[in-house]
Length: 186
Length: 186
Image 1: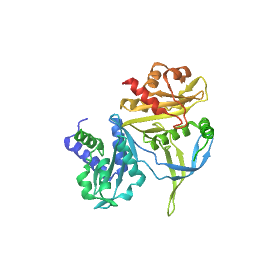
Image 2: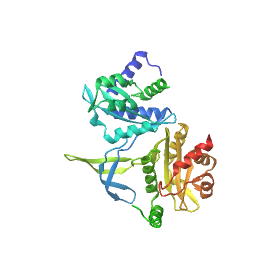
Image 3: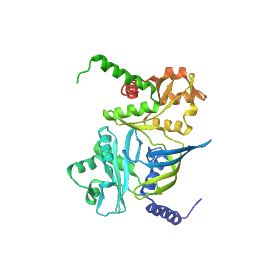
Image 4: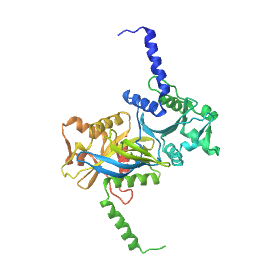
């Protein structure tokens, strides 16, 4: 089919605009699915860890009747990119001036240290002031060790973080940011 | 404290014997915890994926009132070893002659192919005839492609799999098997 250019453009913009209404989790799941479909990486959201209290067995199924959410000690997403292990957490804040560290559990911070130590890629994706930043694990840990703070100032995120471009697909192209970080580090 | 040698030996044997009664899942969780504690690798069991139907919000907690188990499309365990991504499934069979492939979902077999393609380490740990074998992903896939079968014969597992030694700790030292496989492949 042939559409006049302005119609294609309009459609594209509608969809592209649509991304802005996506929750951060949806935008990342969309991107991960895009990466899987295009054979670029295998990255998944881990299921939420739960503690099961009661289960009913029917002839065909096992149904959970009572359960509770457990506190996570690792990060939300992990996967495989070009043979390397990566793991990250994605969080957004409504604050315009800083990202509160209460968003990341102390166990998770410790886990980030260990992933780095074992030569994996650990990082955060932070949505603040409607922008998305990838904060590289070592930069995050170095900041924590140098400053005794309960939040990351927006200025720090802006300077040390890497802005993630919003696209039609993938909604958040964070792997391209990682490519650039690795290229610089070589 | 000083204990006579025979008492220490007796204690050790009791615990070592204890491993035999462990379920496969416990033996692997024990090994993964040992690897984490000894800073050798970061490997975790993924939480079981569930679909949540009903949730109650109390002032302090969020309690799941109804949920069901989802069919997994990836493998049970994944993690980081020396910068590399690894993922595996652990299953046991009571059959003495073969490992039924109904233990592994078609989605999971496809996932194993993709992990290999993206340069990760994918494998199975199979308990059969009270022995534990590590079956390397490419060997498993090659077998599937060459044979139209619904099970893996014990003879094949014995010949192509790598026996995992049972120890006091880690209960199943599968990383040592991986070291050997990688060394041979170099």
